[in-house]
Length: 169
Image (tube, rainbow, N blue to C red; front, side):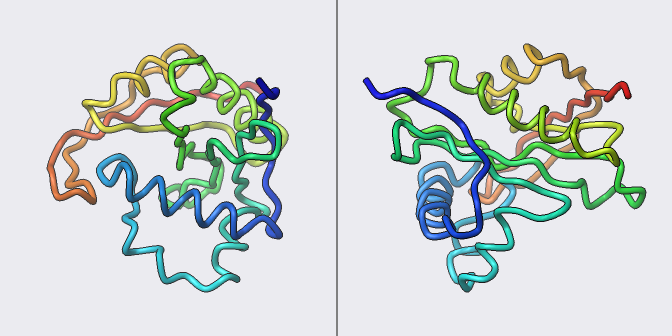
């Protein structure tokens, strides 16, 4: 088995990112905030901009050179102060699940967020029925913050569970 590693994606990797993201949205339409149809028509420059910026970073989980997972950290748009980061976009290809690889997602994102001096707090959420996300979130020190009803891209309504983590500086 080839070693599995996580690394920040670069805009030049937009095609691999696009293909993986679209496949994830198609495979799990009710787990993300965006739908396949919302992003499928993006031009290359939008995919490139989505990967990396001053306020966000997408990471790729690789087995050798093969992309097997993606995750991201963004500035939370609903915080006008810009001091809140949000974790998003996590997806691991089904054959690689259940191996503890989400730990790499958390390590990479938390490290990146802590290196950005503007952030004071991190939010993450999941669909109420997503038990594996709940366990991973709690394992990494997040505490429950709130619950809100949400209609997901698959058309179903189910609570969204929010958690937060304060960053000590």
